[in-house]
Amino acid sequence: MRMVLHQVLSGAGPYDAITREALAIRELVGSWGWDGADHAVHIDPRMGRRIRALDDLAPAEGDTLLIHYSAYAPRLARVLDMPGRKVLLSHNVTPARWFWEHDAQIGVQCALGRRQLPAFAARCDVVAGDSLFNARELGSELVLPLVLPSIRADPELPEQPDGPLTVLFVGRLVPHKRQDELIRAIGLLRRHRDPEARLVLVGEPLHERYAAALAELADEAAPGGVLFERSLDDAELEARYRAAHVFLCLSEHEGFCVPVVEAFAHGVPVVARPRGAVTETVGGAGLLLDGTLDEMVELTHLALTDAQLRAELRARGRERVADYGIERTSQLLRELLSP
Amino acid sequence: MKPEEALERAKGASFGEDLSGFTIEPTDEITIERLMEWAVIETDPDLVRSTRWWGAPITWLKRGLRHLMRQELGQAYAQQSRFNLMVVTRLQELEAFVRDADGPPPGP
Image (cartoon, rainbow over all chains, first blue to last red; front, side, top):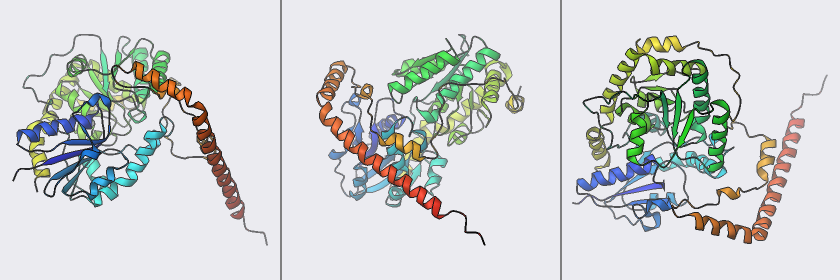
């Protein structure tokens, strides 16, 4: 019997990690000979025809529905009444407390999403998370790490970058990812330790007003030290990783944190606060410290400048990447989706 | 140095600066004052835009429509804001009532 897999997302956008994973899964299951299509409630116009409207979803009995849950969306619940085996993959929902002051609509989606998620889980046949942190919120121990075909543990570590000392963070410019703290951190780093260090922030902003507020902070706290970039294609993003000396994450909430794994794959040492699933994703391969901003800056300085430390972290990161390689995750995916 | 040494060395670091500026703080407690602010609907015209790569004319059209509809939209916002404010005001009165009712017990 030919397997049919339909994927359902709350929203789909060109720079969204969950959307990219869904497309990667589609390609993977397609190579297995599976049929099906991918649907979303909200579709960014830039997605074109790669994702279909939820209204077009019409599964048959015997089909499998993989529901990527990351936020509330109206009409998403109707999927639970459709025929087919339902697999819930929780990507976690950011607590609304981070959005009330900045985006009411997203705050509402987050609040409703966290409220709805347990009820969703109760009506699905299989419940999993893309991290143990996410799975355990729903009382499950099933984990499917994000499917990342581009992540490969190269046998040779990339060359160390030879440009200016660069601290990198990749992620949407949103409150809980604390780019405000990253900006203050680079200001402290430049004033007290490494005057030539710069911060590169890659990500789409919550909205232009939020981006402007961060830009204003950068001008005040670290003039000339912060570069904001967005809408990078894969080659441009790869170049940013290759030019980075340290990946610094000060997020207060993460359901997985794909960029940490991407940093490992590019031989970039990772310094992070242990929040949400970051601890799990980093494992023992990075520097995790629940410290003050000053302490995080000092740790970043050490990771930037100590050759032995950098070599150790780069080696550990390379080992860690293997845990997220496509060979392993595709096997886990097949086990999760097969009846 | 080893990673474990780096962690130990970083602990206690202090640069003695008083940092200010745009700061993200999660909203954990919704006060009546905050509800009063939120009760009034005020949209941001800058958020009315198209994300398509050829979106400039669409953005112009959207903002033009918004302007043309301002009387209808203004009424809708005003009526909703009026209701919101009345609800929050009643909530404030109820809170005060409960607070007064839970006051200290009468003396001997």
